[in-house]
Length: 356
Length: 247
Image 1 (cartoon, each protein chain N blue to C red):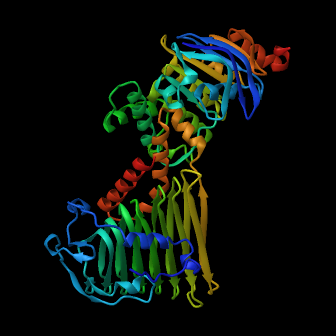
Image 2: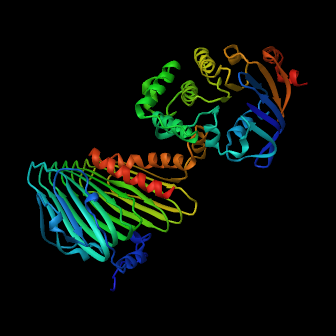
Image 3: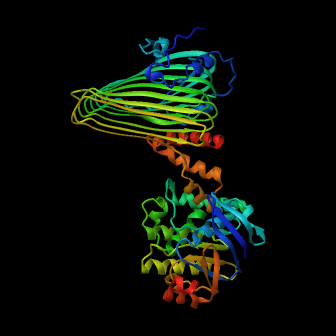
């Protein structure tokens, strides 16, 4: 298979693990027995995609429909055109959560999705990625006036690569909260483009936990096109061994998008000095009456705190786990639904137990 | 209980302890006093096992065990408690979680079964009440936003919960007002003044010794113990200063 991928000379792709993508696509098929454990105990629709194809027997579509969807212009998003899933909620609707589980069994698979919430509709989508291979996704999100969407995505693939392209338009007064957790052992890349309308609210953040030789990265651009919008990009990256976690987060404020309140908090934690965390906050502000706070720091666990905990009887590995967990908690706390938040925290704990 | 013989220790190649010897028996309270830079805090850290403090000579036995062979968390499980001069803030980890982890890790080290959340809370509340630390502070992240006095009281709450055999308290009196000093002093007496336990109080000043009466007072100067006496030695030091006492 010939992959026509962008070059890492392009700024948005400078840390991209493009070799990892090609390698993932060539992975041999793997068997995976039980997918049911990947669904959380939540009411509502359940969709199981195996290698990008709906397993109708193990799915309960609810309000979701399967439809032909177009790809996008994005380098990875354009590969996804074809059959995909769509959640379309009418005005004022409040739907049960929609769970989507993607299991890859080797090779590459591509799938588009669309989430369209009409004015004042409220939705929740939880997605889980597992298995091995290259899973490539495009998710288009359109939120009408005052609609609210909570989206939580956990990337738990064992091998291969998961690439997510997110294209979101947040309407006037609408709210989008997207939280991502990378806690598997595969490579990942999240490409986000969020446009915030008048008085809209957008969160785009999460935690990337990398170990071994793993590479995980996110490149996101939040664009404030209209006045009075708010956005928060709160990311935590934890890297150990020779792995690398990279975050490039941009905020763009258009000339007339006055009173925009944008916040970026990018923090990296190196559990070993052989690991890498790349952070690149970026601000492009054309309006003159805005508030855009940004912070980017990379550090190690506080040696004084580790000794303090040891002096109280806590072994070093456990002390490191407690402090690392506290470090990523800010990002996962943004998940509003308690069972989802707890499941994500458990995945982070499992990662810590493996990595430390 | 604790036997230190000819202890030499250095930090970054600089020798701080230069042949310190000291014996502490069960039921005793020892005060170590001395001028700044004498090596008082270093002694506490070496006994606690802080990384970066290298023992170059000498031995330390604790209850018959070679203390220096043990990892810091194993020393805690063996019954050693180090009270910090500057207790460390740990954002994002609650006091309750920290203390329960600590107690259960120590219990595991002694092959005892862990306490449940409810059992632990009962112990923690009793200790916090005894030291005037509010329930709210137990739930807050460890030492974050605590005043100097609250941090020291929190140290004593921790000591009460883990119930050590030997407490080494490094300037537990610094940063305390008169009332807090009394509360902390009462806490030390209540938790540690027992025939099976011992205390090593590292302090600059005599005032804590009004509340926790030592059996022995030692002067630590230039990495060694240069004088030993009873409680009256602390008064003499307070009156005449270290320079006079050492000379």
